[in-house]
Image: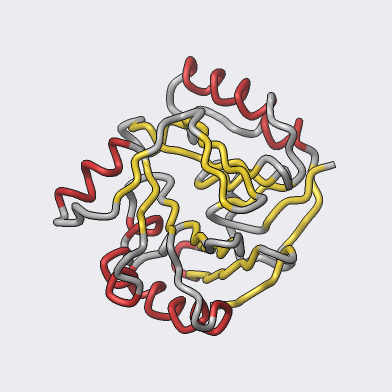
Length: 214
């Protein structure tokens, strides 16, 4: 697992799996109350925890954002809770129901699309996107002040990352969202419209390099 400080208040933790030619990202956002974006699968969480502790020191990790229910987004949540028992999982109603099915029933903060959460000077807005093969409602989270979209499985790239941050054009990125990623024409167009309305400066995807928008 490689660690990059991609912004003053954002750490990227990146792991590459050669067998599927794909990298996996978790982000630690250093708001006054720190937030982790995704846990990674449980084996990744085991590697991630010492790195989080090194960055935070004695500060608690109080929030973990889970964009949708899949192993690389929340597979290590139970392990994470062993070390940070008061941590709150921030997720959609559908994801919360799935977590409950695995016995995780406490400290779940359910949010809906267009909900906002303010932590210090950071303002997070939650945006709907249809995730996974069942088109369950997943969430992306947009930090409005810095223009950062934590975009989960949208805008992903395969392969090992060469640089943690690359330049890109938002128009091209949005046009590249296709039916393979969102297998519903209606949902796809709605998602593109919602993303186009954001004042984006950075994309932080679940897989591949971070993208600086110009």
